[in-house]
Picture: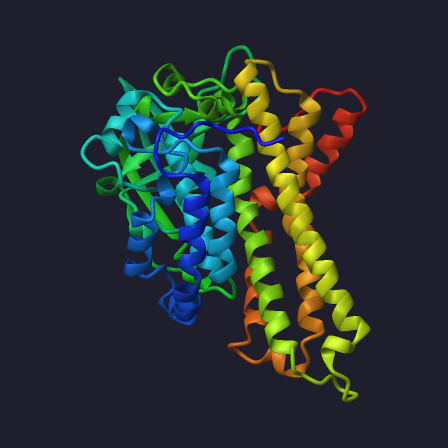
Length: 399
């Protein structure tokens, strides 16, 4: 099954994929520079923008292509394969162009009215304090981990909304859309993985955020939003959590493929500690085979999830709890599954693999960094899936 969202552009998914693959040599060449810079180089970001990658899920009304998310994530896979930090930033910044399409059109006008290439970074942890005022909120807070923020003029940051009287016991989480003039960036990004992602800290002090620039996660879970009135593609009827969670797990699939590529190249002529060619060593062969299988499986699950969800959206049918719970589990379990196979590649690359500059080692550190994202923690989604399998309602509003 290959459920398609019809793009409003003459650009095809295959062409976008070709553009990503064509960038890989440049990205590999700049990988060390990107790490040392601790952010994506300006020229690299300009190439990503010029290639149209950020517009793949952007509304057609603002120059976007409205493609099936699986095609966007296929591009992310190829970019992360060459440079994990760049793939990560493309993924987590690019998904916001889809999210903005769910908001009131006034919010879309604020961001894209003068320039449809404007980008948004984020940090969704509900650390913001929102005080209701006339027309919106007075909002303050501090958030870590805003990847790619140096290249964006807007942010989505998390906070608590007033309680819903129908569900007073449930925290109402949301994201607040704020322009560059209303926040500060603190340069504190010094890490052992994803060094080039520039995931710095944001500070907001008493900013006014109008009601129409607030996105409720509960609205996202219910697949409702004012933006749907004008952005009518099935793409904008997908559950918010299902699209977002893939933004933080898919780069790990490309990174694992990059590690496998580097493993095969590095070990193609290397002898192991007993003088045997690694390519003839059962342990070396098994490590490669396991990695390849895990990567293929993760990609197939991603494609299956979006084809299934879009089929429901196109038919106007409600999503099944079991599908949503399973796809949520599959996403967060992606990194958990890939860590041991990349570790096995590293273990079979010999003692010299511990030196700085060894690609397999560096990409292993990046995989470990992916695992630290809250949406890649597998425990709650795993128990939720098990509960839904027994007939209980889903308790995961991010599914």
